[in-house]
View (cartoon, rainbow, N blue to C red):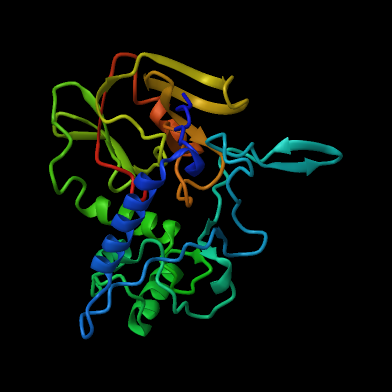
Length: 298
């Protein structure tokens, strides 16, 4: 569903006295937010530059209209006939970077997931990029074959680090309830999911992509109520393979590109193609889904 746009009255329709009062309040607030001389310098905000794949010809940008949850399946030519790339082919891990750091040997700029990556790599968590941070992040990227390995803490680096940490400590906060029946556990904070039945994990933890700002994936308890293996979205006119719907139009389904991208889905829980195909064989109609947390930045 698409939420209606909020309607804002033009400034010309606002009474002068009210407008003056609002402007005065804004000035007061701005003054209050200004640090006093000698105060600690506030942490600089993360870059607001649009992120792009950091390797020329590698990875894929998100859909240019930013409407469907995914790009169309990649094609290759066999003779003169374009055919889909085999399902088993996994995309390279290509980090998304601001254009200003593309080509840099070691990024001096804090990444969009700087704090999260610092925490996961056991660095000093201050949200600032240092030479030591860049060296450690670059070493992690090299080890995990993330391109380019230039120390920028973007969404792909964070997602990979979060996944590896979860394989060692799946649910440190014990957020997903243990039940006698199967429960698909979806952690929006870490952008991860797994399936458990009582104490047994029946589907190992994988990265997911949930709803972006304005299209949040609904939290709480849900039930898989409809499954459609070859679903096609009539809203976005795009494929949604291995769809398993659990809340209105929100479903688990496959995407053909990278999962860790700068923005989220339109509410669905996206999985990589291979992971979605495996999940199809694990869940059944009537199985329960439990979702908690919030996608970072949403």
